[in-house]
Length: 286
Image (cartoon, helix red, strand yellow):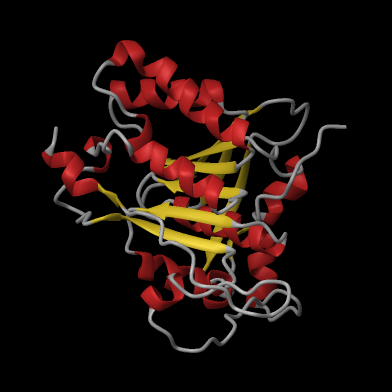
């Protein structure tokens, strides 16, 4: 039997068994559709399974940490223990650069690969994946995407890749090329005027059954859940609450650089800080 691991989204895991370890899962949604929420749940599951996790986001690292804390993730403890790293795309200012136009310096992927291997990362979230896969030379796009995703598979990291819902022919082509390579592809959809949300299974390699779409809601303290679970929580059912664990107030920069404890309980010197990826330099250099 082919092994699967949970994504952290319970209703999806119960239906499909989770995702394949060491492979990539693509999540597509419009702004506010739940991409980051699913990424955080994916990280939370990894931490519960004692896996080292890395999340790279265009959002400020402090904001990601606060959002994760609201989901009950003990962020301070996880970072101090060296189990969770949050990196942000340096100097990115929303509104000044379009997400689908951002490019990274040429050595950025080598930096990312080094971080993954050096820190022994097992779960990775790229929120968003677009800057890593977009190329000006479309003739090399399919080869580039294939090589990019296969690297994660070779080094054994399970990755969740997010991208905004395509709004142009080139964006649709890019999404299709990624979907051709990854074994699992999902779309988080929502009706107009903030109507019902739906998780759509666009591709699940090896699945012989299961619904193609599943309704869900986003609860502030637990993330993506099916409506029945949300209703039980609203009614005060026991065992649903995942209230944040109180943590010591501490500057995030200090947390990121905090010493890791080894098995003997002693604290070795802080690990080398992973380099930040600079969006601004990349944009200026185009």
